[in-house]
Image 1: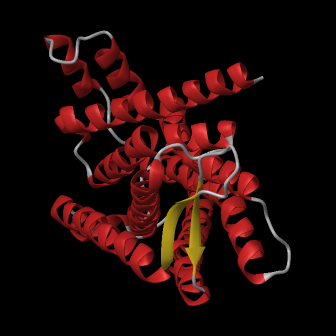
Image 2: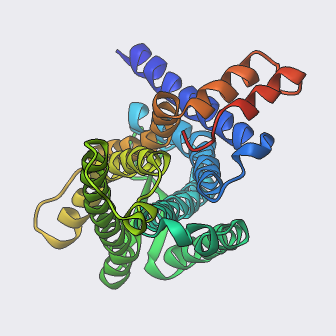
Length: 313
């Protein structure tokens, strides 16, 4: 049983690390992929890669063994990286929603509103503010420690929280960004659906004003919105159970065990390995770039094949 758990966990960790490093190399290396949308994807993949390196292995051992063997220092930094990378991922999801909202709802002004310098500044600000937030949340909210209760277990990496900071973290890290994401994507869905009906009418040779046609986003933009919408939906699906347990534990008389909470935390971390799978299923640019990387042809003249397809498809 333990062997199977370790094998499955190790496979998940390797999938997270290798999948996201492929995304990072693809977007970083191929200049054709240096678009505002892909830069946000790059930032998200970097955060997911760090989750696979620093968070998933230690959490896997803690869940399977039921103990924390790594002491107070590693416990503190494990919590610090957890808050940091979660904050970065959530902010990237918000940026993705904003990017797709402008691309689909205001395509004529997308090139002037969403620029590479603006996205780079937003991503940099996100990482810096996430570092400060992670440090502040641990400093003011409570602390993490390796608790030794005298049993055979060496300790447990547990958190002690204050109610005030618990509410702040819940609102800042989950409720507020998720509300923004859901509202923006609801608008994107309605606009994309309306434009799809207009295009169907146009295909049936019904007159459509030029002005209306100019406002219709390209098919590639709508497809990108759909794909990144799946990324966001999967993100919410994997993170909601943990936050529900946190709410139940903090604000009701029901006590959720540490084992269940740790399992939901690991499920949330597993989300970091899902995004490359989604890219591989829906993005031809990722499929082709990953093939070039894994065949060690990334620096060969054959890599010019990247010029043969649109980065948005």
